[in-house]
Image 1 (cartoon, rainbow, N blue to C red):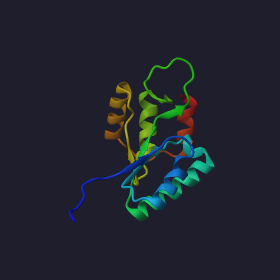
Image 2: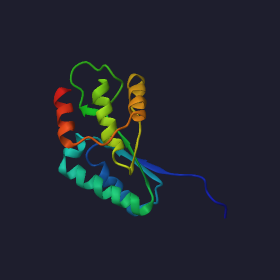
Image 3: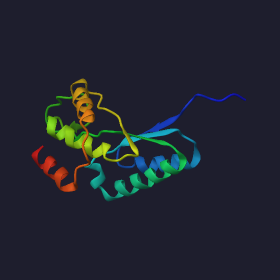
Length: 145
């Protein structure tokens, strides 16, 4: 039997996805999982607890942990000016802070936004990554946004 070069991953959205990925990894040997990861969502105790459990499981099983929605601020309010499912942080300083926060976790991959106008901002921010912002800095950034 030859070596397979195929890899399989699992994706999901919303506040229940981390728990669903944990169940999936009990049954199947996925190579990667993809789910939302941002400061706002991690303020939800249940989501944060499940995400952290998923991080541990992924590390144990050598599963890539890919993250989306790093710039998510909240559900859309008002006019949609970006092609995202959520209202994103979009000013340069807020994008930099959000990207620094996600990339401050060495276990995760950051998947860029699908909006072409945000893509360049995310790539530039990733190229200037600094240390992970403290919670107080994240709260200040959100209050300004």
